[in-house]
Image 1: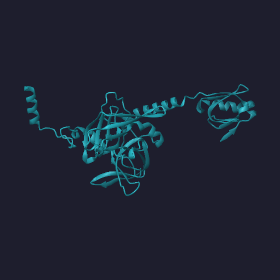
Image 2: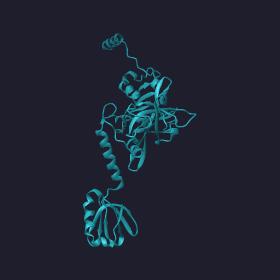
Image 3: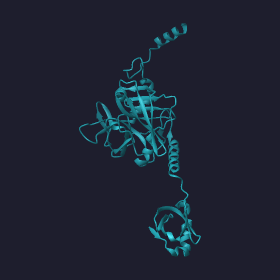
Image 4: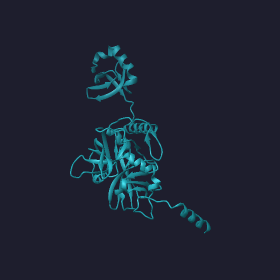
Length: 335
């Protein structure tokens, strides 16, 4: 409902009283009238001859010739964005269970893709090698990140590009000291670590559960298809049990293209529920992602998949038999 507030507003005590009572809920802007009365609310629009203000229970349109002064008490856009981001981060910190990676402590709050991308954008990275590029996502503040095995297969010279939010601008930072921590070729998973000495504490994502999803729910992917970094595509979960080459995948209508590989597939709570890794090239809207449960198993047993410089083609690291290990320790002690 829109309420017009003409010149007689100066004599309308009930109107001013109601406006004053609603001030606590309405906002922080104050309009001083020429008869020394005031209206407090949130200014919605300012035109040459009138001002529209939301006072909580209605919207008043006040003629300019009745206004003596307008006092605004809103934070600058940058400060407001920083405050909102801080609240968002604080809220997420309170709602997750931390370990080597973070998981939600309970059902996540559903939001819209626009706001979620702002919150999690810094945690989605671009992974580059001499042979090509892919995507990835950071899982903890120490700089550990996940991508696909096929993105870095046969490569040891790896760099990671992170896009940091600096006010309203994005700053691309490239880290070149990237170490391979663990590999699982058969699940198409790789765990990397950014080892640059000047690297900060990183923003990270929360790993959710694809088991809790229902077919038809909305999901979205963030990645670098064809090198177009920070590309967001949205769709639905088409099926949770698509069998390909003996493995089960999530199928989604969110557009997946070369360069998306290794990037996260999110639910509308901003939790990673899959890792995008392939598509059907002869059709559209036929993308696939590794269920996040497979990635959690890989991370929980990462020592069994530890990368070995002695045998870089092997996705597993086999421990020595106890007898040989003991003999080697005795020999080192003698030396």
